Image (cartoon, rainbow, N blue to C red; front, side):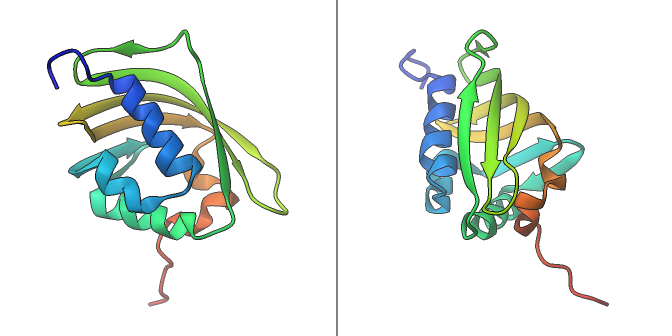
Length: 138
Protein backbone atom coordinates (compact mmCIF):
# COMPACT_ATOMS: atom_id res chain seq x y z
CA UNK A 1 0.00 0.00 0.00
CA UNK A 2 3.00 2.29 0.26
CA UNK A 3 3.16 2.87 -3.51
CA UNK A 4 0.97 5.98 -3.35
CA UNK A 5 -2.03 4.27 -4.96
CA UNK A 6 -3.95 3.95 -1.67
CA UNK A 7 -5.94 6.90 -0.34
CA UNK A 8 -7.19 6.62 3.23
CA UNK A 9 -9.81 9.28 2.58
CA UNK A 10 -11.11 7.48 -0.52
CA UNK A 11 -11.21 4.18 1.35
CA UNK A 12 -13.08 5.74 4.28
CA UNK A 13 -15.65 7.28 1.93
CA UNK A 14 -16.01 3.98 0.09
CA UNK A 15 -16.65 2.26 3.42
CA UNK A 16 -19.34 4.80 4.34
CA UNK A 17 -21.02 4.33 0.97
CA UNK A 18 -20.92 0.54 0.88
CA UNK A 19 -21.34 -0.32 4.57
CA UNK A 20 -23.16 2.52 6.35
CA UNK A 21 -25.38 4.08 3.69
CA UNK A 22 -26.34 0.67 2.28
CA UNK A 23 -26.56 -0.85 5.79
CA UNK A 24 -24.45 -3.86 4.78
CA UNK A 25 -22.76 -5.29 7.87
CA UNK A 26 -21.53 -8.26 5.79
CA UNK A 27 -18.87 -5.90 4.37
CA UNK A 28 -17.45 -4.95 7.77
CA UNK A 29 -14.75 -7.68 7.46
CA UNK A 30 -13.75 -6.18 4.09
CA UNK A 31 -13.25 -2.67 5.49
CA UNK A 32 -12.31 -3.32 9.14
CA UNK A 33 -9.30 -5.16 10.52
CA UNK A 34 -10.17 -7.83 13.10
CA UNK A 35 -7.98 -5.90 15.57
CA UNK A 36 -10.15 -2.81 15.04
CA UNK A 37 -10.89 -0.55 18.02
CA UNK A 38 -13.32 2.35 18.10
CA UNK A 39 -12.85 5.23 20.55
CA UNK A 40 -15.98 7.37 20.45
CA UNK A 41 -17.19 9.95 22.97
CA UNK A 42 -15.56 8.27 25.98
CA UNK A 43 -16.58 4.79 24.82
CA UNK A 44 -14.32 2.06 23.51
CA UNK A 45 -15.32 -0.95 21.44
CA UNK A 46 -13.45 -3.85 19.92
CA UNK A 47 -14.15 -5.37 16.52
CA UNK A 48 -16.69 -7.93 17.73
CA UNK A 49 -18.80 -5.42 19.70
CA UNK A 50 -18.68 -3.03 16.72
CA UNK A 51 -19.75 -5.76 14.27
CA UNK A 52 -22.59 -7.05 16.44
CA UNK A 53 -23.86 -3.53 17.18
CA UNK A 54 -24.02 -2.69 13.50
CA UNK A 55 -25.72 -5.99 12.65
CA UNK A 56 -28.44 -5.20 15.20
CA UNK A 57 -28.80 -1.58 14.06
CA UNK A 58 -28.82 -2.30 10.32
CA UNK A 59 -31.67 -4.77 10.86
CA UNK A 60 -33.88 -1.83 11.91
CA UNK A 61 -35.60 0.70 9.65
CA UNK A 62 -32.93 3.37 10.25
CA UNK A 63 -31.46 5.10 7.21
CA UNK A 64 -28.35 7.23 6.79
CA UNK A 65 -27.03 10.09 4.71
CA UNK A 66 -23.46 11.41 4.79
CA UNK A 67 -21.83 14.68 3.78
CA UNK A 68 -18.25 15.82 4.08
CA UNK A 69 -16.47 19.06 4.92
CA UNK A 70 -14.21 19.13 1.86
CA UNK A 71 -11.88 21.69 3.47
CA UNK A 72 -11.22 19.70 6.65
CA UNK A 73 -9.19 16.66 5.58
CA UNK A 74 -5.58 15.77 6.32
CA UNK A 75 -4.11 12.52 5.11
CA UNK A 76 -0.88 10.58 5.51
CA UNK A 77 0.12 7.17 4.16
CA UNK A 78 -1.97 5.24 6.70
CA UNK A 79 -4.13 7.82 8.50
CA UNK A 80 -6.78 10.37 7.69
CA UNK A 81 -8.45 13.05 9.80
CA UNK A 82 -11.59 14.86 8.79
CA UNK A 83 -14.99 16.28 9.50
CA UNK A 84 -18.29 14.94 8.25
CA UNK A 85 -21.98 14.79 9.07
CA UNK A 86 -24.10 11.68 9.29
CA UNK A 87 -27.86 12.13 9.26
CA UNK A 88 -29.92 9.36 10.80
CA UNK A 89 -33.57 8.95 9.94
CA UNK A 90 -36.11 6.57 11.39
CA UNK A 91 -39.85 6.54 10.63
CA UNK A 92 -41.83 8.45 13.24
CA UNK A 93 -38.75 10.20 14.64
CA UNK A 94 -37.11 13.46 13.64
CA UNK A 95 -33.92 13.15 11.60
CA UNK A 96 -30.72 13.91 13.45
CA UNK A 97 -27.64 15.44 11.84
CA UNK A 98 -24.53 14.26 13.70
CA UNK A 99 -21.27 16.15 13.30
CA UNK A 100 -18.27 13.82 13.36
CA UNK A 101 -14.63 14.81 13.86
CA UNK A 102 -12.48 11.74 13.26
CA UNK A 103 -9.01 10.30 12.95
CA UNK A 104 -8.79 6.92 11.23
CA UNK A 105 -5.76 4.63 11.02
CA UNK A 106 -5.55 1.91 8.38
CA UNK A 107 -3.59 -1.33 8.30
CA UNK A 108 -3.37 -3.21 4.98
CA UNK A 109 -6.26 -1.19 3.58
CA UNK A 110 -8.62 -1.81 6.48
CA UNK A 111 -9.66 0.41 9.36
CA UNK A 112 -7.55 -0.49 12.38
CA UNK A 113 -8.31 2.39 14.76
CA UNK A 114 -10.97 5.08 14.72
CA UNK A 115 -11.03 7.98 17.14
CA UNK A 116 -14.10 10.19 16.89
CA UNK A 117 -16.07 12.86 18.67
CA UNK A 118 -19.69 13.35 17.67
CA UNK A 119 -22.25 16.02 18.38
CA UNK A 120 -24.75 15.11 19.45
CA UNK A 121 -23.38 11.94 21.03
CA UNK A 122 -24.70 9.21 18.70
CA UNK A 123 -24.99 6.68 21.53
CA UNK A 124 -27.68 8.76 23.25
CA UNK A 125 -30.01 8.98 20.23
CA UNK A 126 -33.27 7.01 20.22
CA UNK A 127 -32.67 6.05 16.56
CA UNK A 128 -29.66 3.94 17.54
CA UNK A 129 -31.11 2.34 20.67
CA UNK A 130 -30.72 -1.17 19.16
CA UNK A 131 -26.95 -0.69 18.78
CA UNK A 132 -26.28 -1.73 22.37
CA UNK A 133 -27.08 -5.30 23.42
CA UNK A 134 -30.32 -5.69 25.31
CA UNK A 135 -29.81 -5.69 29.05
CA UNK A 136 -31.07 -8.71 30.93
CA UNK A 137 -32.48 -8.03 34.41
CA UNK A 138 -30.46 -9.52 37.24
